[in-house]
Image (cartoon, rainbow, N blue to C red; front, side):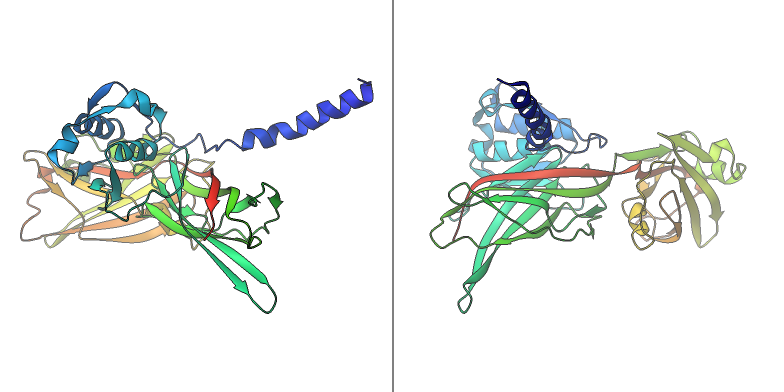
Length: 376
């Protein structure tokens, strides 16, 4: 082989290497989500308990006792450091069931399959699961032009709390029924709010293939989520009560907790007869993903302030809250507590303070890939 030809081959390998690597879905390494490992041959109920233990996600079933007692060969399912949804779908398939997500916490219920239920094509990448829910094709008879719309559903591990997600797939590649590449125009990128949700339905608009083609041989694309690396829990010293904090110096160490560079402060505490007001201030380090002014409120969408009883096992949640200030690196929110018939406030000395808020906000790219999608 000549040096010129060898040089061209090496150049081709160098150029193709990133493309080959990109074919394997890769998600952001910055986010902290549980990986699941299940081994052995155990009853389904024990496998589900272990899955719940490893992920912290509540999993219940509407299955009969016989189905829960039936053994599952976990080694055959190859559940070694897989994502939450990969494990859930594998166990559901083994039990001839389907997972249904419900509840404010993203909990999952395994329900028996109905006669007309089918398992949609699925792709996993890190904490994300993408499913094809439908394909529709339309044609214009006066021009013979047409389009193909692929409906997608993106879900994520419930412990991940993304605040935005691209609603339009990017860098889409497609192959027709003969395996030939089909050019797909790039769509504009935007972000849709998903705070408080655990899935998002979206669509990929593709060129319509000639009538003789029965399938899409390959469909790949990329999406982007904006999410905290994790949710942080700020405990203002379990033995320090709300009354103690109210008497502490504003801006002092007793009213301040720092975790992973995020500073959480109890800025203002007002203990009135009719209500209590607690103002929380969050300061983020450099490196937080910049948010536009109209997006910034999502930074505090999943925050939670809880008063926990120091004597009795009680929890008191705010009756209302107001965003005083919010930006990419600072958020200030005031929470109000008033008496409820079933949950009177009592004394400030009866409560300790815990605040849950996002860690650093980052971009999390992920991909989907499907083979041999049948056309209608």
